[in-house]
Length: 204
Image 1 (cartoon, rainbow, N blue to C red):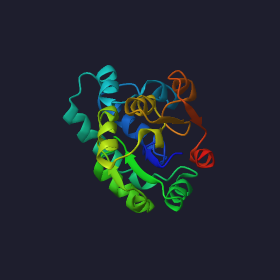
Image 2: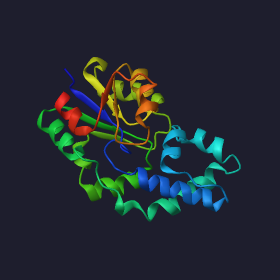
Image 3: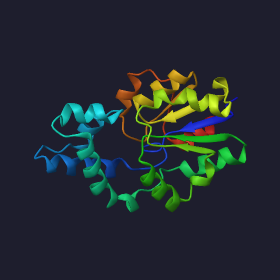
């Protein structure tokens, strides 16, 4: 039985793909580079995102990219909604006594602003944010909170999330609601593939 649920934020609970793409394209315009179409962005974007920028914008410094992204993304924060079924899933976990955690690369201030506005922060026992490589964190989370990997799942929308779950020895759940398209996720051979959070709720 799954008693513990670890969730990604972007593309899993929050519908921020459009906002991230717009902010990313604003950065590329700043450097005089070609912008990404949505399908092209989903095909190439990956975590840790430092690898994506190293490939497509190697002349930019990490500090410069952070400052630009912050400037462009902040104007889009209030447009980001929860994905369909996300709140109901969190409520279900709460009602059934499942321990729920967040594991995300999102900047802490961005998460705080979005989660407070959307009213979902109380659903999480602990939120781990600004984690650039989730694979390096998941075992620590399991140990810190005494979570049995056999009773734990990690759900996310990217190949990196599948790899993270496997690194922690927990059930990997790929969601088709976010950044990585279905073919990219399926190439990673996830154990479970779900259309959205509503489907995951019914699975549990």
